[in-house]
Amino acid sequence: MKRFILFLKMTMLIGAMSISCQKSPSKTASSAASLPPIDGCPTGKAIVSLTYDDGLASQLQYAVSALNEFGLKGTFFLNDVSAQKDDWKKVRDAGHELGAHTLHHPCTASFDWVEAGNASEDYDMPRMAAELDSQLALLRELGQAPPVSFAYPCGTTWIGKEQTSYIPLIQERFLAARGVEGNISVRPAPLMNVPAYFLEGPVEAFIGSANAAIEDSGWVVFGFHGVGGDYLTVSNDDHRAFLQWLVEHKENIAVLPFGEAARCMQ
Ligand SMILES: [Zn+2]
Image (tube, rainbow, N blue to C red; front, side):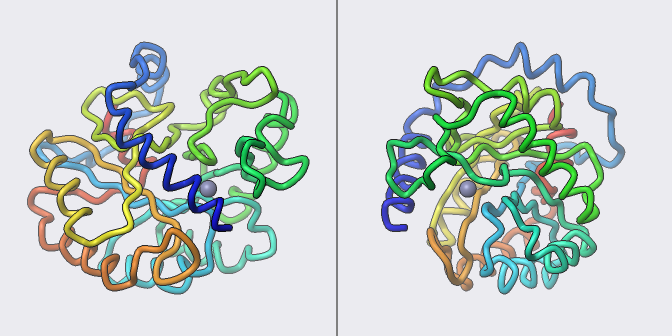
């Protein structure tokens, strides 16, 4: 687990350093153009999306209740939660978005915490396609209607020993996909590897990134793991303080689930 955390920290650091390595918008912009428009997109405001990965118990315990209390909607990128269907169905019923994060969370086998047989290198395109389709069926069972959002496990967009991009499989099935590069998106935003900040606090760090989005009238996505528990933990106090700050800055910021924000950023 410590290696897992270390890897994620390294990923975030690399993400923060690689803001100049954005993908070309050409391909994803054409995909986004085919999405149906939605009503009520904010104008002249920054958009903030709060996303939570890996379907963790601390999210169910603390993050969901805090979001509900402050009247905000988040996005939960889940793995195989077939043993906790009732819990996550309630989250969906409360108006939060449930997104896909693969069932088995493949990351590179270079990290020895990766489960044997479930490394990125162990996948081929048919296996990944089948897993994504199974997960879409599970999310639908939980009440999540399409179009569905996706987040790349470890931010890794390739599978197989040849490191083949599986972005085409994502593009065929999903509305938008979140990556791990720390950056702010502006319209028209490429939607197949949307940047996201993974911060562990203090609250001023979250506020700083949100203020940068206000300056750009941009879209900032925050990625969380543990909230008040589990790993890569943001404290319950920092999480709540940030939600409170967001509510107090509604004039300048709209907080939208990832998928809704993506459709507004076309
Ligand atoms: Zn993950």
